[in-house]
Image (tube, rainbow, N blue to C red; front, side, top):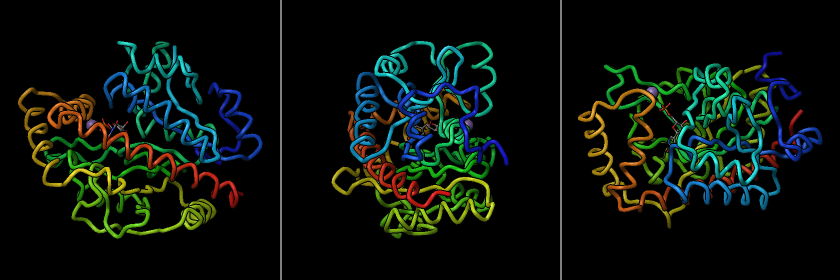
Length: 313
Ligand code: PSU
Ligand code: MN
């Protein structure tokens, strides 16, 4: 049995008591990431969003487990004060998979990306994780080789990740190609079109479609029962009333991507820069859409965790 399929939480993790109890009882738990709090949204909307999303998960009948590194300890489930710390502290590292050993060894605070949240969730025994958007293949990656470790992790770790798709700061077509190569099911909830985060449309067909959480839960059960390691990307289109017109957002994204190049921003700083700049260029409209889609993902994720708990081995 690999670490990603262990039934008991890894002893290095510090689980909040309610999370430990829910997992031990086989009740539904939903993992939540923290990069979206520390590096994805401005204060105070980031911490308001984090609290609200936890509340939505509870109302959906699941226990929320926001994941982060605090003083070098991998924490699964945080208090309100700890969410506030992640939203305000000036020295919180952005922690993807490769950063975990360093931030833990040096006892720092770290906000976890999709990749590292997936891995820590799996080590805790959590199978459903809700986020906003996935990382992917960056535009120009044929030169820069900038491909998010989120994609590698989706190929390795047995967690269903609920997102609103991939935003067009990335190369959506190449991201879908890499996910196919890596053997990751990409299934869009209730739509034939793959969503592009701020908009329901992307110009790309959804590789798979599902209309019920029961069917998604059955996909999870079947995949892992067959020993097909790795996650499932569940993509949930932003609610129609909250979406931004693709034409409106694409000009802003093009401008933000161009500025990123002009300023020489590279590596792990690219995604936070682009997200922040798009909020500014849209006069905050993109932030409202971002929060709305996370809420919607939390509702779907809680329902999926419930459906999976009913069929899980
Ligand atoms: N996309 C968003 N909001 C985010 C992120 C991506 O719309 O907050 C964050 C997630 O934590 C994701 C990470 O895992 O950025 C990807 O960063 P990188 O491209 O450096 O792997
Ligand atoms: Mn990168």
